[in-house]
Image (cartoon, helix red, strand yellow):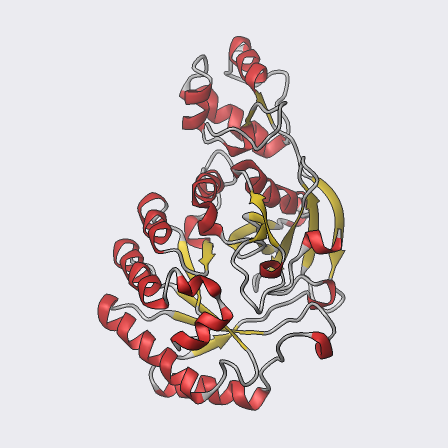
Length: 363
């Protein structure tokens, strides 16, 4: 087990364990008992005094070395525009991270958009989190706990549930790939959160080796890639990570991921007025998509995202692409055989929309 950052009172965090890893951490516990203990933690939020078919000695051994803390809820903000809800959660060392509850088309189903880092070190110019700098990686239990907090706010009598998870909150998930993989395994574990891996998407600005690791270790999980621009000079200006990992190398790794998993990736592009929304940009993106299709036999799912400034529009570094340019951009992609879908990004009035999460700036 990795130790929690700098916390002298750290034990082993139960909500970050699968039954198998619990037996590795506490040798007195059998695998059958571990399934029941993990199930109790995720159903009841606590470790009860007794659990049927679990020996008292096993429970005492777990209590001696394990705990299941919660993140402090500092605010819950519901959008007045739509059913999006943003949670501001405080870590044990005083950092604010943000999580968003996203409504899905089927009533009662939601996705949890979770953070993987406190802040972000990538400095993407169109993202508020990227301007914060990085405080630290989140531990696996802190990632899982965000999903658990969203579930606590649901009405189980109305059969509301967390149907999926998207790693697109604060931070670059694949810069924290070890903890993200550990969290995903708990989220998919039937005894824990029991979320279908195919409804989990890990989004990245592009770290090729970590993309390959994702395919090897959690192959049912979908991959999302932030494109920025398919033109190298534009992407590099928008996303400094392109200097270390050019888009060619990112898409090569994404192709390997697709061939290994059989899953088409999601390509996301935030359109910025007169920056990356030209027909030249659209043609470059279509050309990239065609190359990807020839290499894998799979068409990337292209998602268009509107720019969401944090500051007042007149102070924002970019402007949202207008409807006519967005329409022309999508029309060219469609003619080239790669239809793009506009993704609704809700909760802008509470700064819950894509690119707006910046908890520590507003603590």
